[in-house]
Length: 320
Ligand SMILES: NC(=O)c1ccc[n+]([C@@H]2O[C@H](COP(=O)([O-])OP(=O)(O)OC[C@H]3O[C@@H](n4cnc5c(N)ncnc54)[C@H](O)[C@@H]3O)[C@@H](O)[C@H]2O)c1
Image (tube, rainbow, N blue to C red; front, side, top):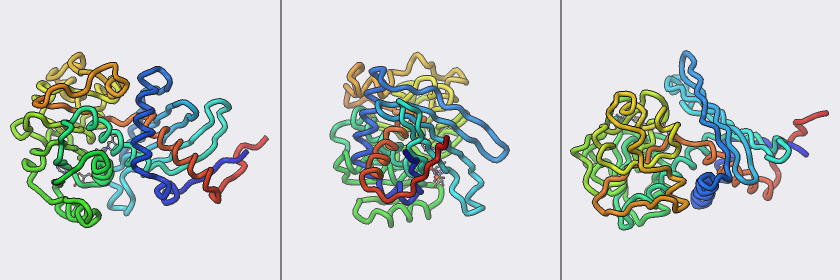
């Protein structure tokens, strides 16, 4: 037995968005049916950022992701978010692989939002709005372009160069820069900023819009005016995690929104326990905080492909 070590570029080369969407959707289904395990992620604040430990198990795989958010890192030429995942055999605990999980995080975040859009957005959605054009915007775009026939993609960022870079990266997609208000006037809107105050105003959200609220994944973060939540059908990835760290966390603390008003979880909708969108004029919101089963399901794909391909660095890590 040996432990496989997979670098960031090796993991990236093994990732395929279509496969990740399939694996993540199955993981949510398994979780809703009691076949997956996942304690709430734990946060540890340090002086210049934070760390999160995210353990989880799905059928055939277990593991933990250790991920940081250090927003000052760009000055040092380092990414603000980096992640490592230990991938283990659930039957023996053997560490089968240690892999970079930075791109796993981006892929599974994009995949999960697109899965939410599949169940919650209007089937005839043709326009996508990206509020925030940083790292996560790329995989939001890739995942949605795989599931919807998009005729227009708009992107807004407080840094124009971020939008320009996004447009340049995807010449095959109909992307243009737009004003914030214009970008929000899309059939599907993904908010992917680190904002701590609402960026999206209620007045700009049209009836029938689906919003993936991705950016708020820690206490104190929020991207939407709370009045949008009050009128919308809100679906969360994890009830406890969302109320503590998701889009609803600030409004709940301020008494502007009640956890009881959440419609359900993504797992309940995917597994058919609860219905997805039923009304073309409803505003739907997916509050994504990011859950460990998404990472483990993606890591399982990566590990299986790496094993089949062979040739990666492996070591007898566990010695007698
Ligand atoms: N829910 C999840 O599963 C999940 C997963 C990964 C990241 N995130 C969160 O998503 C957010 C974005 O992550 P990232 O990796 O893309 O970060 P990033 O730093 O690469 O990009 C963020 C972008 O948002 C822009 N921005 C900041 N404030 C803005 C505003 N008010 N309006 C418009 N644009 C604004 C920045 O200029 C930047 O281009 C972070 O808050 C991160 O913690 C959530």
